[in-house]
Image (cartoon, rainbow, N blue to C red):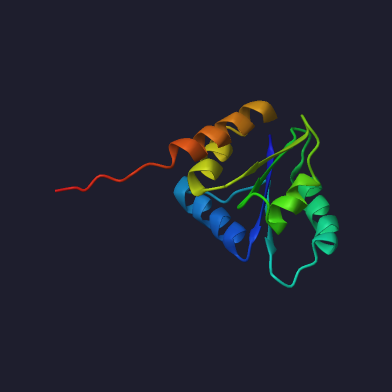
Length: 130
């Protein structure tokens, strides 16, 4: 099973995990999160991020999701990447996370593609209901 690590600003990662658990109606396993504050030193976060990635990896690889490209969480996440073993996506959203969780029994490359498609397809203009 693919492990999932979410690295994001503040409590966003924790909130996404809780929301995905609510949507799926179950406690999530093999998922970890790391919140980053303005006071955090990226170098000091890296050992904890590596520890969390290792803790969710049962041999199926790890998908690292982060909120915003170029910010501290994504900069930490990119230092964890190892093609084919630890993959990453920025711009995370609840649809992206739920899609990744739904397909995480598949190989890492499939989970990565499903997460990307969940993110793209989750962004749409709402239509008014009358």
